[in-house]
Image 1 (tube, rainbow, N blue to C red):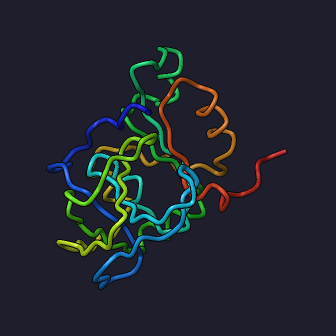
Image 2 (image 1 turned 120 degrees about the vertical axis):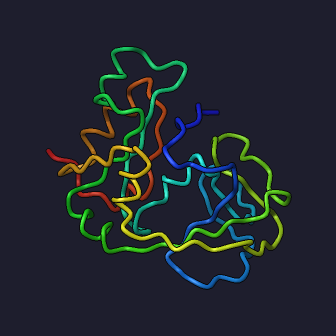
Length: 182
């Protein structure tokens, strides 16, 4: 299992969340999906420490990374002095400022920790949210949390460096990134 991301400013207590662009969800039904497990139906949740991985418009491609216990001093340089970096392509920054998403706090008792991927939790039963928080100006949320939001022309050169390093990382919606430069 990968090392967890470092704490972020204003993190708050541990809780489990599901983030959606849709408001007013009253219940979450287990669904097939996810490439990390056999075809089983789950409700997916993320813990508070990793919630910022979802402070993006839904389809926004992003590369996120941080140092872990096995990260070398040479690879720490990719962080550029930050503890945690989330990178997006420059075509997404205005959409991040304009977007809003909804974070649904879920009851932890019906979830189990994902066996391979830190920060993710799974439930096999229908889940009703305990509360909903509207999140907006997602770029500002990163700033308030002390997470560097790196805006770059193309994710692939950075992603290739990260994935061949000793850093911990998560890539989400990379299929939506611009094509890799030749």
